[in-house]
Image (cartoon, rainbow, N blue to C red; front, top):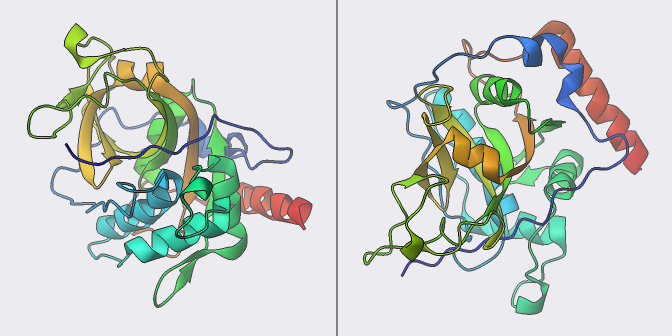
Length: 266
């Protein structure tokens, strides 16, 4: 059995929360029908999510690594970095399991925007915004243009079923054997993970998720059934040239939305 923790609270919305709907051209354009990144290793790490419910913090750390991988290099993000940020963004106290209660994605993202995601040699500050979970075209644009989509999902017990080697099902889908447990979304709990690429846009086409230090395949219909929130993170200083990133007025709209939210927080 491999240790895997969850830790994503039910989705919440806050007043003046940055929304990607302001990036009209970026979100409305037709997303690539296929996003193939088989030759690029995003190199996700577990970042403590095997022993702590810090998936929201681990997700940000792995988003940094995924963005760097697209530019052909890598950024060191360690377990200590993720756990330190988990404590800062959720109130977790190291050594006190009663405080290991997981996180609210929008609160965690707001903390990263306000104080940064601290690493050994630098602190990174993302821009971020939320998307409509029914806008799969927009979520694909986030994935193609901002390196990965930061998602909150309701996992079923059938999703966390393991075989004799401790491995998860090769593909997460809505149709599962009865022996894999309860297929009801949310029966296992909430989890934060990243959408990295996709083979197509049909319900049964495969997508690649970054979670628990690995690449997990799933179908679009699985994601639609589990998805409870979707966000875009923008590490503007890390994004490589040539990626389908937002430009001009779309960048300005995202910056303005983040500044307005920071002003409201102060």
